[in-house]
Length: 320
Image (cartoon, rainbow, N blue to C red; front, top):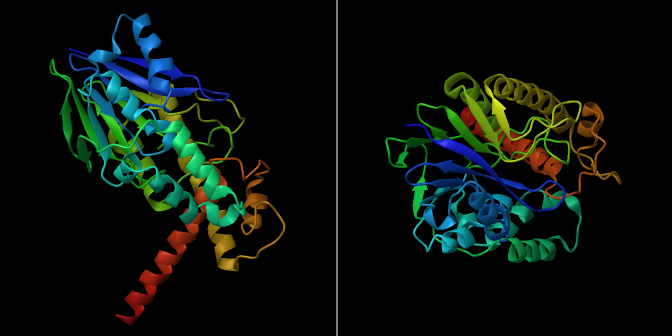
């Protein structure tokens, strides 16, 4: 038995939000958009294919960002609280608490944006788009297998990088792979890839390319090629391989620029790219780095944190 996959598009901003319906005896939805997505996007999309949201039995979350978990509580309610909600333990705090999203902002990109109202804006955003705080039904680390009935199983694979708790869900036998935002290519609207853990991101891309080798790859957003054209969110095997290879090539360029900038020392300037002006210059990046979710600063902070950790580990090793 095979499971059909249907994209579910929910209205939001310029591009909409994407979730995916796995049509199995115990149906699953991968990612949930924001608070309004289940009622405004999923319900009519499922009705159009003769399915009911009440019958969904699994809510599979690829990671903890608000545009992927914001609708989880609302969707769970629409299933009569019968669906099981699955998330990696590292990202579970973002499902349990709106405040976790605000703290993530302050500890990461918020350090560089110089927005005195940044914390208040994050509080307002989480209140507006997260439908409710909740305890997950199932915490995963990777290696688990989830049965959707009828011999259809989904395996869980850790793909940290975009967040520390990002996972890929793979429909076994079909090699249909759902990665959320774990494959960034050139990023989405901001034109820059966003990840908090550069080493994890690189290793995850290599793992997806070399070990998983998707037959179909489902992305959380229509990430862009170098010329700005979108890949779309449903990629065949050839496009999936290209997207993974291109993502690795871009990460290598960003890494070289970031590491060179960090080695030279950070300097505060009036530039909106400060203190990472050399990186923007080296990469020819000229978009607005303050536009949320500010992937430029998220990623630069990741390299900065990685550099600090590496220096500390070298110090311990040299004095051990």
